Image 1 (cartoon, one colour):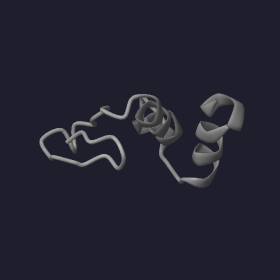
Image 2 (tube, one colour):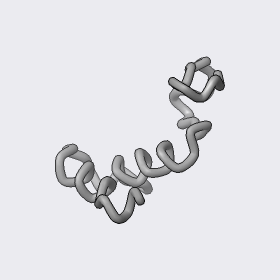
Image 3 (cartoon, helix red, strand yellow):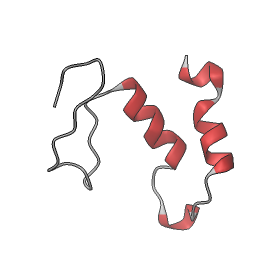
Length: 57
């Protein structure tokens, strides 16, 4: 569904990013977080984040 909506492409079109310094685009990262709600980036790995409606920390 994320691909059908074109969400990663839309996000990549709106967000200014330096593609030479990225392995994964912002849109791809958001897609990963949508498909896997327990996905953690290194920046938030040590933080406890409550996901709304999921009950996970």
